[in-house]
Image (cartoon, rainbow, N blue to C red; front, side):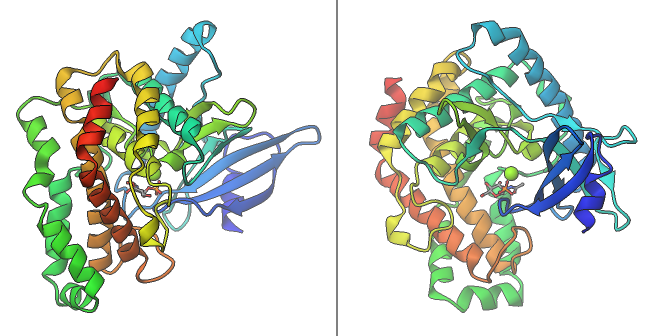
Length: 368
Ligand code: GN1
Ligand code: MG
């Protein structure tokens, strides 16, 4: 198997015993590789970067290295004051000293350490889990809050710039194929109307940025619940994984993404639309956990846009899935044709639920 041959090119002691494809991930392909020597075993994560999405994968690796070295140093400095072990994956160099391997087909591979004896869950498990998710995100943002955003590459131009996704949708809708996909289903037409009704509002964060109210900072970019790891031994949050989208951005993208993914107990892939809603009890727990750390670095203006960020990132993800469905599923990995349409409907249902609970959510955000 190709992945096994690639795994062997990274600096890990021993020989590859097995390489197993992992199901997670809408963009990159992920494998677990197990190495053994006569006396020991090491498990690592091997990933093939999707070059359709990331034009310059070497920049992702530079961002990852800069950020992980910064965070590892800070974790070490604070270890004696900490109530737990904080972890963050480490980039494993290839045998030639580079941070990646390019195979004979030009595919780009990288290896990172596995966070052992901890798990991430695709859906929220409990109110305690929600608190821990918020706590981990707040701690992560605090640990990188003293980094200069200019030290990071913009590895994914337009990422989380909602009005840009509208343009992508509009371009797809202008093609005959796009029109055919739109009119082939009532659900697609409904999604389109849902988007239309929110066109003017969806630049809310970009407008605040343009007015100078919000500033670019280093962000994670994808802190959904399935990227937050919980320590098996203690039940406490220990780590945030999937550092592909670390780049300059608004902390609101992260806050919104954590909330929209955590407060929908049905999860992103459910086919049961009726079960999708925004759970404000979970929201309260996440916000409490988040503010334990984030309270120290949020400005008044940052706080002002927290509600909008939750609504926006749910809406934006729906828009991204919908635009991809109309375009013929060219961005996100899919297992069946209507998967992106279904994912879009889930996020739009969630957006509606957030909108219906606006005053409750704003109240929770003011309380902490
Ligand atoms: C993608 O590949 P994955 O699952 O880590 C996407 C995120 C979405 C997420 C939704 C680079 O992340 O932005 O929020 O799917 N990543 C990219 O599950 O587009
Ligand atoms: Mg990701």
